[in-house]
Length: 115
Image (cartoon, rainbow, N blue to C red; front, side, top):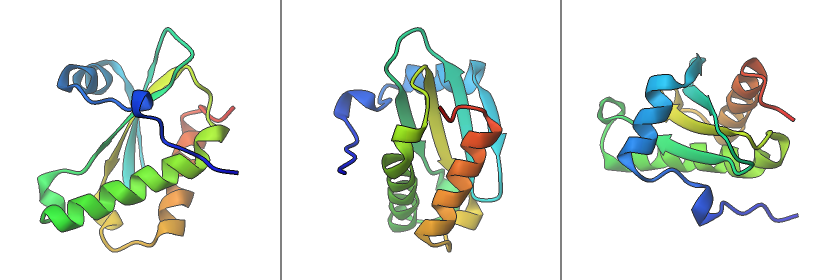
């Protein structure tokens, strides 16, 4: 089964990020922070972030790739009525994909957004 990350399912604008940061609820573990904001519709949107303190562009892009992949392969397990932001943390710089996926599902479970 192919899981695609659709273009319209991604948060792009700064103000949509800010809305989720400001009014959303956050859940964190060593690898990442998950911001969750209930939305009105049935289409989930997600944003990925990696701050400058993680390292250079190569490292930050790798962190975002890992976050995207963890979301892409597990998005079918999530309920749709939320906007999400995933923020990579320092522990993720050196971690492998399966640890990232486990951490992601753990946070989704904590946030009770698994369908």
